[in-house]
Amino acid sequence: MRFPGSEQEGPMPQVVSGDDVDEIARHVEFEVRTLHHAHDVLRRQADGLQWSGHARHTYGQRLGAQLHNLLTAADQLSDVATRLRTTASEARDERRRLDRLEQDVMDKLRASHDPVGFLAKRGLTELPPRWDTAWTDVHHRVFASG
Image (cartoon, rainbow, N blue to C red; front, top):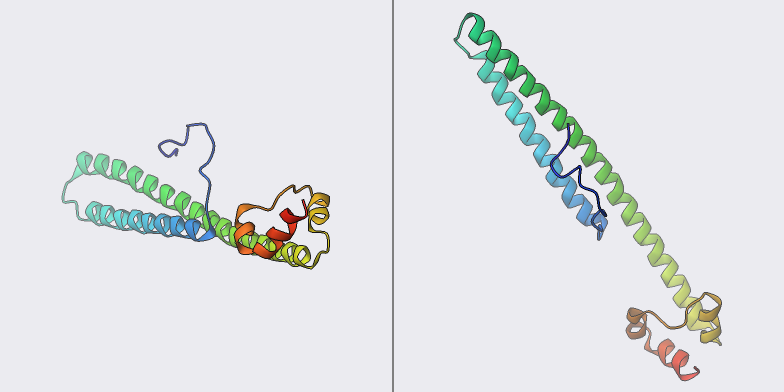
């Protein structure tokens, strides 16, 4: 089974945070519950058919195929939701790792007697904009000595 748009090529959208991915996973899980509900409704309809003979058999076969497709789609969406939850967790872990690394670098930079040399050794020629405002004392020291 292919989902609409899955055949399109191109870059994947950028995920902003693990919370965004969690929200997507919640929507996917809702769709899975909706599919299971639809399956239950269709099954009850099939059980309640009063038709006889060939018409009931043919309708039952078609309904059975639709039910199978619904359950297959629900399984696929459940797998997607699981992968999204894993991705969200990994994204949060990576964000925490990067925050710790940033804090470590900033601590070393603030303690450095030669901030320009410290940055140059790491291939940086200027402070990122958000560091400029967050660490104005370092910013002034770096650009005053440059």
